[in-house]
Length: 222
Image (cartoon, rainbow, N blue to C red; front, side, top):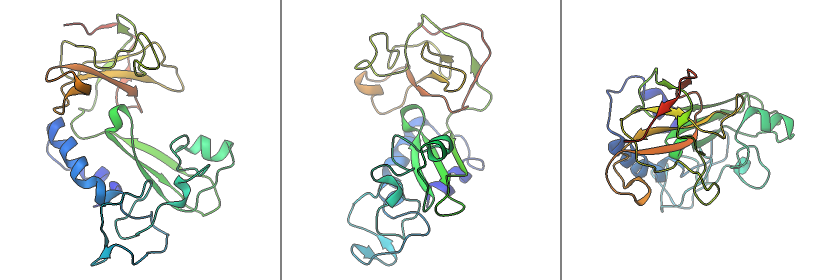
């Protein structure tokens, strides 16, 4: 099952827990990233029954049937971790050769598909779909007390893994801008919350339109 299909299935699937979703991502990761994106040539090494095997991940790939890395992921390719957007691909003259699939968003919970309609041109679309456990229609304003969405190693006032009061409470951090919204959601991820153990904690990063800013301050403290 490709990340493209995983994104489509979220619209049909019943709500699932965050822990189940994370376990699913872990279980699928070797298959999701085991081949190059559509358009690459397949290889025979490590392939069994048309599927790549051997546990080697091929970053940026969209198909488990293409047993080689996505060439656009390497170096200054448009699928490299520092790009993966339409604006980057176009403005930095980083043309694509094939579709790019990657994780994205807060805690890498989302699924990104960058489409390459014409090899040699920029990406036409790079959407980051939220996971099914994040409800639609969430909204909030500035986080109170204020803080940063980046890790503590990068920002002394980081809000990552700070205890919070209410599941699915959302707010926007001090480093958020109109063109690059950043914020947090209060959840128990079921896999340790960054070493904090079970409970409700803020998970922060790029918002990707998963929730909206209504301008009303949000007090997240328990």
